[in-house]
Image (cartoon, rainbow, N blue to C red; front, side, top):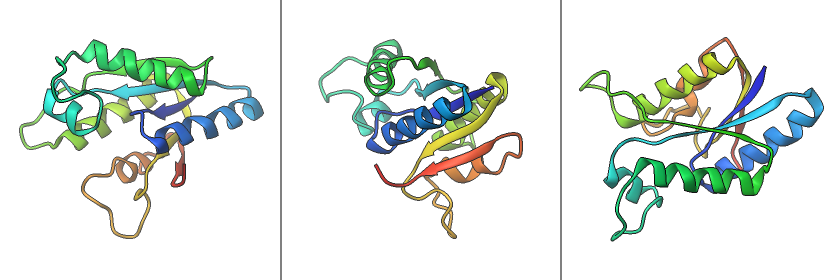
Length: 147
């Protein structure tokens, strides 16, 4: 079993990774940090992964995410995925959510640690991956709301 942490370099994803490290010691499980990186320069810039004048490369963004994850948890296993565009009707958030759920199943995740300000609230924001991921009964979900 593994503890899975969707990781985008944000303060909350770093906090989620820190919490996963605490659980990993207790449960004697490995941690995988997962960065889901859409093949979209505008998305990368919007999320602060690239400077305005910097050339886009999924691999370059993945290298940055790996460095950031390893700075929080040096022994973390890092994985990145490019979400598949399976439907023209699906949003980028939906594609990312689907990818996280697929990886959780592939990795045999026992707990998914999600850093989200708005996951699990009564009203589900359109932009949150927390709610759809938390619906899967195959793993527990730990939602981190404070860095």
